[in-house]
Length: 171
Image (cartoon, rainbow, N blue to C red; front, side):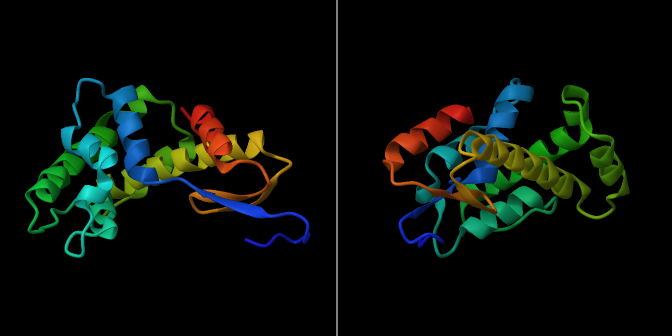
């Protein structure tokens, strides 16, 4: 990516599989007793499960919808069922485990349709933003832009070392 200053290059860094990874992390942290067998498998081996018939968008839709999504994949159907269980856990128990802003609770209380899926998405989006801000703070002087689930950094350093450092920061 060209930088504004012709002598600097921008590197594009994006979170890979952001919401499923964040969700798995939150489940392990706050709901240890609930094993997420299919979510964990999906996070570890996502490329194995994405196809023309079952796309990344299908998985994200399933995670964010409280309606059952039908696909011709046994794995997808099991993960879809697991997502619905996770949505209910977050809806019913998350605010007992984590202090939520009053704004988030007020938003939750206003939800009418697909309330469990929408609430889960809000929690994941907040966490995604926290992660991005943590990384942006570390690289403050190099951040050119923050975009969705990533950022552009002014750098000529080795990407591998930056990625390793970012992974450490966000554990």
